[in-house]
Image (cartoon, rainbow, N blue to C red; front, side, top):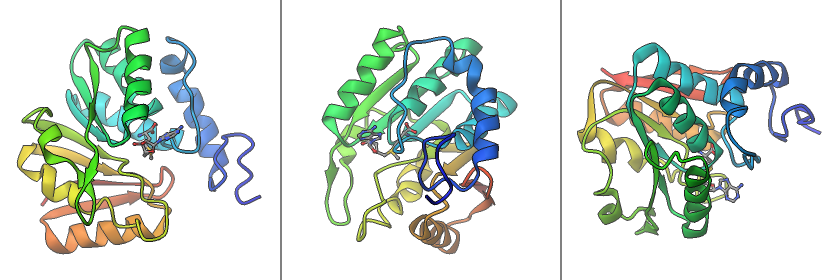
Amino acid sequence: MPGGGLLTGFADEPRQGEDLHAWHVLRPLLDVGGYLPWSTGAMRPAALVLVCNEIVHRGRTRVVECGSGASTVVLARLLRERGAGSVAAVEHDGAWAALVGDLLRREALDGVARVVHAPLRGDPPWYASAALDALPPEIDLLVVDGPPAHLAGEEHRRVPALGFFEPRLVPGATVVLDDLHRPGEREVLARWEAETPWRFLVDEVAGVAVGARG
Ligand SMILES: C[S@@+](CC[C@H](N)C(=O)[O-])C[C@H]1O[C@@H](n2cnc3c(N)ncnc32)[C@H](O)[C@@H]1O
């Protein structure tokens, strides 16, 4: 089995040690609420630690996440603990949006986090822009973990994210792109660097790219 996955549950996970460490780092945020339905669709724990560290180290309070899930709940728990900030998660799947919304309400996190249901439209498909009008006008941390891009022919679905959100990204904002273990996300990153002033560093341990303007 590639990467084992027994410790982490991630079949394509090459770094069990780092993720096991990350589970321990995240533990204060995992122990405070109810069960979280973690699955292979969720961010790797090492990636989520990187995002949480960005919130703590750089005081991020205006967080938008493309692709909702367990990560949304963990980020909401962290922002509530810190007493400042909110996260809005964009979700294309209505049933999944409802489930994540229920998880947030169950913990009374709906004042800190919300799921914005935005079906995919167009070719190439991108979140319906009318729904995205509900997002905050200023964003200091953008996490791109959606739309799903793991299937053949859908590898470049995340390309529009940076151009779409650029006008809302405040000076000094950070953009995190997940799933850098996949060739598709590497190509997305190459496009972003070729076509925008944004520059990224790839954290190979966490499997994410972290970028800033210029
Ligand atoms: C990469 S996932 C986003 C995961 C989320 N950021 C997290 O880390 O929990 C992209 C999309 O997959 C879908 N998804 C995520 N987890 C799922 C699950 N357990 N079951 C079904 N769909 C899921 C959702 O539509 C989500 O927007």
